[in-house]
Length: 215
Image 1 (tube, rainbow, N blue to C red):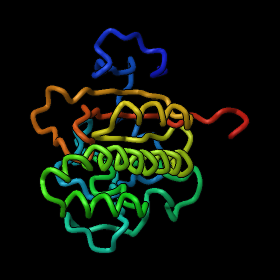
Image 2 (image 1 turned 30 degrees about the horizontal axis):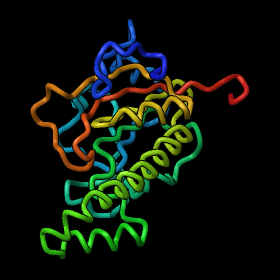
Image 3 (image 1 turned 180 degrees about the vertical axis):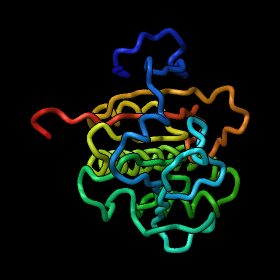
């Protein structure tokens, strides 16, 4: 499936659900050789597309920080630069990446301080610029993470990507992933309108497919 070739059956604000015929994520996970790893975890609420408690393999939890407020981690790792060998991970799990990210530029930091400290009228004038810059920084983070995911995941391995946006599908397919599942979250009442800046979100599964030259 190629996202760019999907027929626009729905308004561009939302994508239809998609599930590749005969694709079973739990069966696929059993076939993979490498370990299962969650980046920027743990995700307490779990994953919509798979019951992780039913898996016969442990999911190793990583986070950029040694002590995650959400729970115990197994190792420290930045999703943009994992301490992991190429083509060695069976499946990588990622959920709601970037909730408080996007603050790498000095301009972003300046705007954040201004938005939080200015009076209401001045705040309104800066808020739109603040959001647009945050989106740019957030996009950089996600693209770097997807690129790193493609590096570490084994051939035919999976990227389980929860609460993504349309641009994530484009980025993943440009990296060489093949989209297996798209679940539209418009009907899910637990959608959080926060880090995704009010965009609709999708739960996604991608498969890494190496070309003959890359193998």
